[in-house]
Image (tube, rainbow, N blue to C red; front, side):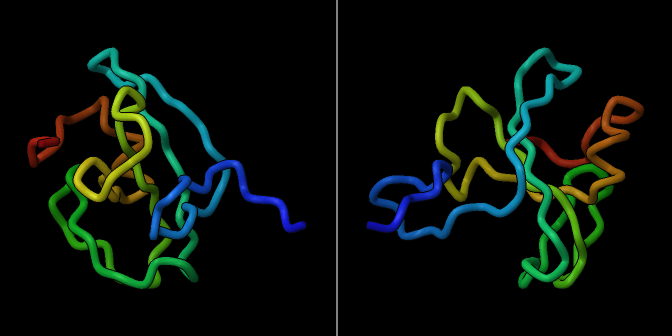
Length: 98
């Protein structure tokens, strides 16, 4: 019998997110789950909330969501440039989280 990946959401039509799971504490005191997305898995364009520039398909980046939200839905996940996420404490996001 095939084993399920532990990050696979039961009953979800979404594939599991790639990369190792890690939790980081933000400057706001909330916990965020952060997953790296390799360039080979980045197939869409996204807008980075840190710099408000586009993350082009094929560009490695991170996807982030608040831990208290439970399993991520499409509305809670945010795609950030890796450098923007790492330097988020130096400047606030240009867009509101919600």
